[in-house]
Image (cartoon, rainbow, N blue to C red; front, side):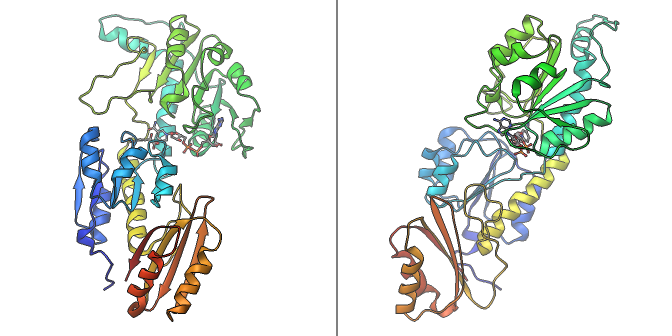
Length: 409
Ligand SMILES: NC(=O)C1=CN([C@@H]2O[C@H](COP(=O)(O)OP(=O)(O)OC[C@H]3O[C@@H](n4cnc5c(N)ncnc54)[C@H](O)[C@@H]3O)[C@@H](O)[C@H]2O)C=CC1
Ligand SMILES: O=C(O)CCC(=O)C(=O)O
């Protein structure tokens, strides 16, 4: 059986925010038993303490892995975001520390698209306000402000994995789909790409946001953009809370410029289910408020657990970094008969020459070598005879510009 430089039972895996049991199962099947599991996110001081001796951390969207938190995580080898978004991690700080970050880019996308489709139908029919009124003893049996989805225009902002699936689903209801994306995208079905945000906003009956959180998407929907939207139209945001100026949205709804909204993500979200949810949208009957559950289905969570835990276990076992979002990607098969050395370094000219010269001087034979770089860091993986592996590790650690090394037997 392969022996790793650090025995697997010494490798601490910290799982937060109730990631699915499937993740625990994957780790355990791979031989990792030192798992600290928390159902919720941790308070800041608890997080600082818990990361200190963790080799791997698994989080969802709540836990903020800032530069400060990462700087305290001396033993951290890899991070798993059990979701799509990775904006909660300081990716460049992690990269500079030589820590790859993995996520699950597809596993919950269908769940988000389905939720949004349901919300479109509910909002076009004015159901949220009828439902709220009925709960208070009212009875609003009226066709006023109630429409079919068929024939309406859906404007998708961000035509990626979620936006495209939503477009296809909406077309099955007979909606016309237009979209805005900063990239040229292949339109699926009968969708049409429109090259300005304002144009989509002014043409659509329903606008749905599916962009990532970036400096460019911060408050991309504010007073001006909301004013561009058609009177009586609907806004849906299941992307990130920072994308919409929430005060501007509340104002537009109160002025009855927009007929309704469905919001799943907020600029500030409660840290746990026990904390109060505060928002200027509270109390508006024509707004569907959901607690960031777009991707929270049994199917999505189970698949995400398997996918991300699998990526972390693979990186731990054999150094493979495929699909890491902040790190040079190297696809590696399981090794046998040799030891594998991982060397992460600042990307400067001459590192590989230094490594190869140092090994040549010591008579260390390199059976295989892989190198990938980003502009910041380089990642070299080498296979050497197991009886030379410890000497090779010493040589690697002495190379100037080294960030970290690992040895896998
Ligand atoms: N509510 C929830 O529970 C969930 C929320 N999300 C959020 O949804 C976002 C989108 O997810 P995917 O569709 O899988 O991502 P994706 O990466 O497949 O698609 C995003 C699209 O947005 C486009 N884009 C980026 N910046 C833009 C800009 N400034 N203007 C217009 N288009 C822009 C990209 O070119 C890309 O086509 C995620 O980044 C995440 O933040 C994802 C899953 C669950
Ligand atoms: O389910 C979660 O915790 C977050 C989902 C999400 O927003 C994402 O996948 O980006």
